[in-house]
Image 1 (cartoon, helix red, strand yellow):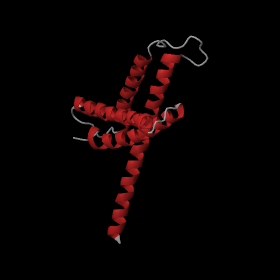
Image 2: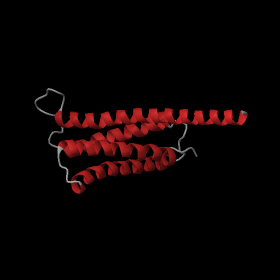
Image 3: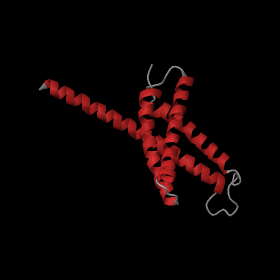
Image 4: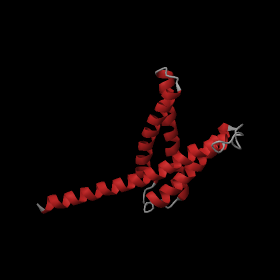
Length: 156
């Protein structure tokens, strides 16, 4: 019985640690998502009720790059110094490179779901694009969580 109790305690502790890590990862990701989408909308469309639009109303692609870049930097800092604060690599550039690679793969996953919706299923509505993006964000988030855990934020 003591062996079973010991194994149970270890499993329970491991599950608790993963859930805590997943919650922190989710909070950082949700804030980055708000920064990305909110930043884009502020830059392009301005404050709600503003008739003139945002400062980058004529440059939506550049606004998207700025908003996504800012959110990505926030996500890296939040995950490095909060979610995975005890699991830093000694080489910061290697960690950042792996982080950016994981995020590029995540963007490709999201774009892939939109591609599949449009070109394989022939769906072209606003609703179908947003459903495809939400599905893609979900898959990309799972990919990032496991990639960060396994490859990016790994203690030396």
